Structure formats: structure tokens, C-alpha cells
Length: 67
Image 1 (tube, rainbow, N blue to C red):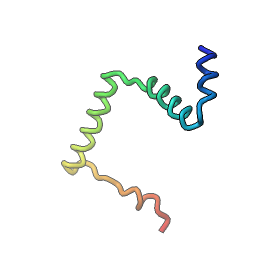
Image 2 (cartoon, rainbow, N blue to C red):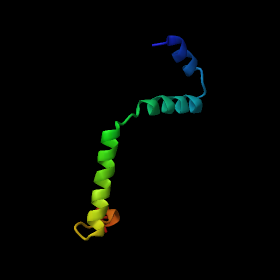
Image 3 (cartoon, rainbow, N blue to C red):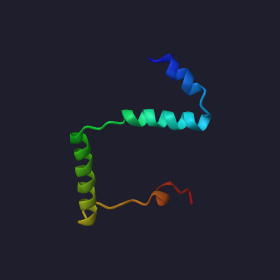
Image 4 (cartoon, helix red, strand yellow):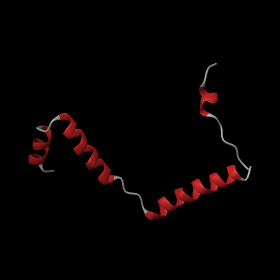
């Protein structure tokens, strides 16, 4: 690890450090094309099931509301 880069980053204002950290983390957020397509297919399958009446959506508020 480049300790000089780390020292420079620590001298940045907090909001700039946060932005820098987010950019670094975003660079690690890699998803293979096969996995991405599998998730897209899953979402489409679920949407079709709802549209065709094979599944129904639940209302979040009614599930977690104590009233």
C-alpha cells in the first residue's frame, strides 16, 4: 500500500475523504455479466408472475405496521 497516498487522504477534509472512499469502494463493485443477467432474468420472472396472477405483492406498511 502507498502510505504517502494514505497520509494525503487523511489530510483531506472529511467530506472529500468520504467521496474519495466511496469512489474507491465503487471501483471494487464488479459483477460478472452472467451474474448480472441472472438477476435481470429473476426480476423479469417475478414481474411476469405478478402480472399473470401467479404471485401477488405484499404491502410493506401493512406487514410491519403495529396498528
